[in-house]
Image (cartoon, rainbow, N blue to C red; front, top):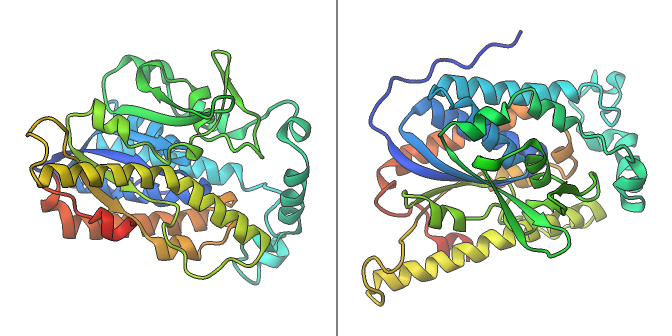
Length: 348
């Protein structure tokens, strides 16, 4: 039995913020760490969460864990979810052989079956490889989230992003109608899973159109503060040389592009407001905050997004906790007053 998270700190004055959670497979454990620390610290209240893929799973588990307004329940729920992910992967045939791992903590790239998986998924579709459309994430999510209760009780707003396969448009799934299929749609990688059908429409991973989308937090929330938890590195030094590295960097750039476009629009509106070119109240001024660890995420291998080994997940969790701690220490006073990140300098 693994230890439960320590009790959160005593209640103290808090500020209301929105969260924007990126996707990134197993790298979503970094976001778990960020949320774990923010819940433990207790100075931020969450009004709404916009999320994609692994971020959507974190968001749903977080919202469900907060149904009783108990931060420790939410922390335990997130821990239990990621433990379940690691447990399900214990018998992953792509892991390096146990004998090999006796001598080193080998990453997934050392498994011949991982490279076989890469080759096969580039040659055959999930409709051919997985005709029964099995998805182990379904059982894990359903066993930890009571969707009827989540839909029926007030709490953190949810905006989960998915991409309509036929139209290419973004679709947002909201808490009041949320189902497990909608969560799986937000995390549907098209080379691994069949498109998820919802009301006669088909969806893939939301990262193609919003990773995550910021606009629902502008239009649907009282709070002007958005805390973005980045999983895909914005900047990666060096030119990728191998085929997997090239494919990974293309994925990072494309999955960051929609977010960067929205941040550019927010920066433009902020300039208009600050220069007095629009009257007060005509446009909503947003305060943007960023929690990220680009050096760490850039150092993680391409394959590690598919490797939910418990030790690796815990290292990412600890890195997320440290990043959240440092961000709060430096920027808490900015929340509700101004952006703590210079959008143009940092992202453009």
